[in-house]
Image (tube, rainbow, N blue to C red):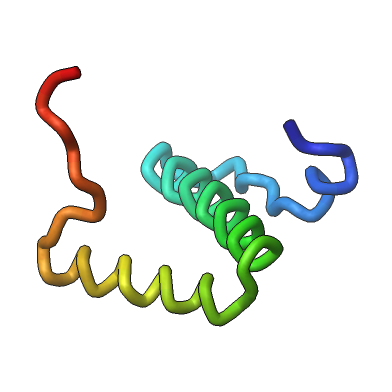
Length: 71
């Protein structure tokens, strides 16, 4: 959950945004929260490296996580 202070810092969705734009905006907010947590726990270098590596995997079509088949 977010506090009222955090909510004030979050950009509010524009009323004229399309559903796709609202969805993208929500993903950017979630990504920002994850990055802030990574920086708080491990520093800016780790967060930057993780984002760059993730972007490289996406660009190359590589899986970001290993999924197991079954329990």
